[in-house]
Image (cartoon, rainbow, N blue to C red; front, side, top):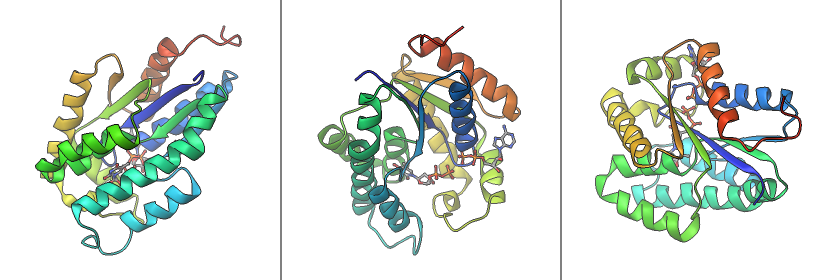
Length: 212
Ligand code: ADP
Ligand code: TYD
């Protein structure tokens, strides 16, 4: 594949969506061909699955069924959007990817992590070229996420303790794959974080003819 695949990860409210958008815009301004997408979702089928998992009664699905739904959404997203875009040489930036499943589904029920890894290997078997972990204190992240409102609150409602475990889990993943991850301090103002992200992305991206 000739494109480049970037993911943003982190706890709810850490500023992933904000930073993914800013990076997409900055790279487009430099003449790059960028697709900005998100999970769960990113393709029509996966967006339908997003509604199934993120809206309605939080106890609607067992932990195992939920894992299957997130994986099904990712598979559709890969087949319909990510792979074709990478094959066309584009930069794909996704707000969340498989690390979110490792942490959210894997941390909630500790014994599910092995199943998460097996399913990933069977159905996805792909990692981004570069992953930004927007790291921050969960109390701040939670306050930011709550301030946003909307109907997709179920994971944010897990509370600060679980969010702390997830933060630690994301940092562990980053330590295990230092070549892929860049850990970014998300507690700073939006523009400072964005400047760090853009520097790291440009350092990792293959040079384009339009680069100065
Ligand atoms: P995520 O996608 O990680 O949940 P968002 O990008 O949606 O986070 O940000 C959550 C909220 O916090 C939004 O209202 C956004 O405007 C705000 N926000 C994002 N980054 C920052 C920052 N560095 N400082 C202050 N507020 C921020
Ligand atoms: P997202 O829209 O990124 O929420 P936020 O902007 O609050 O970070 O993701 C929606 C929720 O879905 C979020 O709480 C994390 C959860 N999620 C999982 O539990 N597993 C997954 O594999 C993914 C992609 C998301």
